[in-house]
Image 1 (cartoon, rainbow, N blue to C red):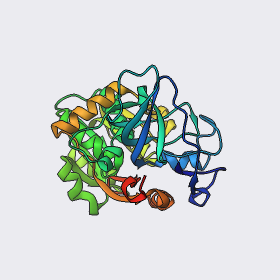
Image 2 (image 1 turned 45 degrees about the horizontal axis):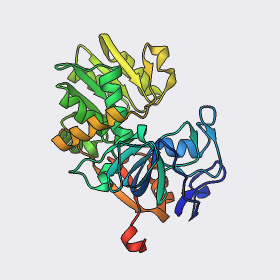
Image 3 (image 1 turned 90 degrees about the vertical axis):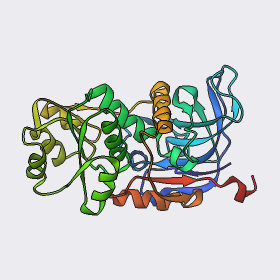
Image 4 (image 1 turned 135 degrees about the vertical axis):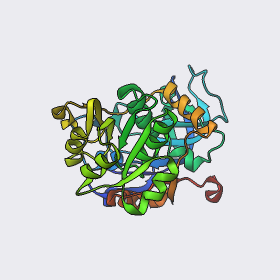
Length: 314
């Protein structure tokens, strides 16, 4: 099969487009014909070795954890999915090696859910990691309630844009940090935009003088400290970007695969409560360009890599 892979840590230049063996399908997995794969910042952090202390790496590595596609072969113990089922998945295993930037991926059923019927494969590929991150943080960690005020950082990005929509669905007031160029986008999602950077604390205080009930940090660094200082009494803070958030009384969170949560996201998408904005797609052979773009930052919504089976004649 054709795939993107890397045999050593490094920048986008270590990514190679070529032929890799088709993955074996374990008893509790299904073979998915990949139609699209979401691109996420954690992918390049893995590729550059920043996750080496957390996850074993078996080179060569096919990057990517997000996928949308079609089941072509279920494992012998699988009853949840059959041939032809359209699925989405946050296909993270406990080591780095078998990712989703390929024509096929062997996906454990614990990582999969049915694809939303109203989303194309490109949009659907952008939902799993970002959607699960937003859902698990807002619902399970921050326990956002109706009528509360929530601060979401990088509100125009992949995770942030889903968090704004989920926050509004939960009945919260959502303040989202974004560049001025993305303010209208954040408003369209249901959030109240504020410009990030110097003076952010004063701008947020202008909208929420008594502080925010919950803050969702997707940036880290100084943003984490600022978020802690903007909390109302008994306010809660979670960061997915900075483990040092615990020094400010907050919690660090790393998203986990959860088929039940993913099914709920599918339902929310089909109800129209959430949507995925794909700003640009790249063919599989140009995946390195997608990673160069996401590492530059300030991406609106999601970047997605596609596998065009019809054009390839496969």
